[in-house]
Structure formats: structure tokens, C-alpha cells
Image 1 (cartoon, one colour):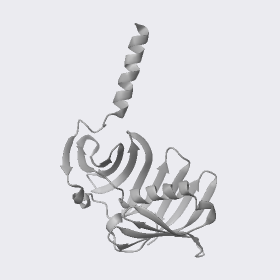
Image 2 (image 1 turned 135 degrees about the vertical axis):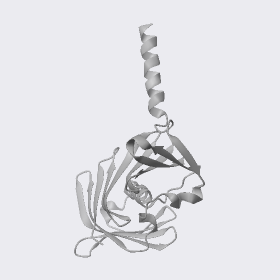
Image 3 (image 1 turned 90 degrees about the vertical axis):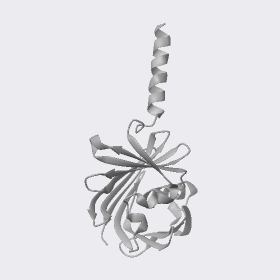
Image 4 (image 1 turned 120 degrees about the vertical axis):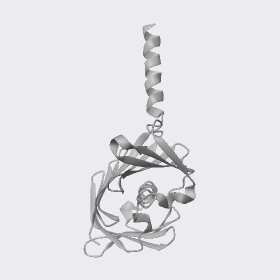
Length: 210
């Protein structure tokens, strides 16, 4: 009997952890074409954006200037150079697909490139998704914009008071894989961005310089 109770309790916890944490909040559903309702300007900015960037990947430290430029609708040029102008990588993100123009040899590996593709899709909101829903969390002064694709959830968390996106979460079955903090906005662009992976040792710190 005791084993049965224990098994039932574990099953309940498992089911609870896999359920939608926003299911009891007021929600609104949108067409996927209404994605620009999310108040997040980084994907739509026409200016060239430059961040001083520090990347910690396992025991490797990479520092430089990350340059993001929108060239066409849904197409971005993303390059990382050293302070002296030496190129570390040069990517084109085209409708969510990462095309490598150049990448330094030790980073030019499929698993690393796939990770960069996921990161930049998350930052620039270029991932494929099947539904767009918002949840109002008045208690936390938040509005959660959820882009969902199968078992994948991309949550863009808006501070209702500032009207800015302050956190981004990438989850699979509600297990958080990547979290992004966005702080100290200059106009519509976040001055500081911290991107943290939770299943691998990768962290990016970005500070806006232009």
C-alpha cells in the first residue's frame, strides 16, 4: 500500500511538472502572422546593432564585437570580430536557417553551429512555430507571449509596467533549456543581454555599444 501511494505521488509530481504553468491565467490566442504584437524590437530594428560580447563555452573564453544587421525581412547578417577586427565568425540567418560565411576552425563544428542557430533564432525570434498565445499574470505584472511548436515552448515575458520584454525562455516539455535576461533598455533595444544554457556549459554576455 505504501509503495502504491509513493508511486501515485511520483506520478502526480511528474504530470504536474509537465503541465502548462500558465494554464490558470487569462489567455488570448493570435494568428502566427500577428507575431509583431510582441513588444520586442530587436528582430525588427533597421539599424546595425553592435554588442561587446563575452562567450564562455566550457573552458573556452571568446570576446569580441557582435554585429547584427537586418538585410531583408527575415534575413540577418551576424558577425563576431575581435577588438582588432579579426573575424571569428560571419553568419547569415535566413528565415531561421544559419548559413556559415566564415567560422574559425575550432568553432566550425556541427553541434556548435546548431547551438548558435538556436541562440540567434531565440534572440531574433526567427524560429518556426505553430501557435501564438499570450497569458496575463497580473500578480507578477507580466504578460507571457508563448510561441509553441510541438513539445517546444518559446516564452517572451513582458513586464507590463515597462512594456518591455525582460526575459526569454526556451523550454522542451517545460524543462528549461535556455534563459535570456534583457536589461537597461536604450529606447527599444536592450543594453544588456545575458543568455544562459542549462544543459551545456555555454553563457553569453552582451553589452550594447551602438
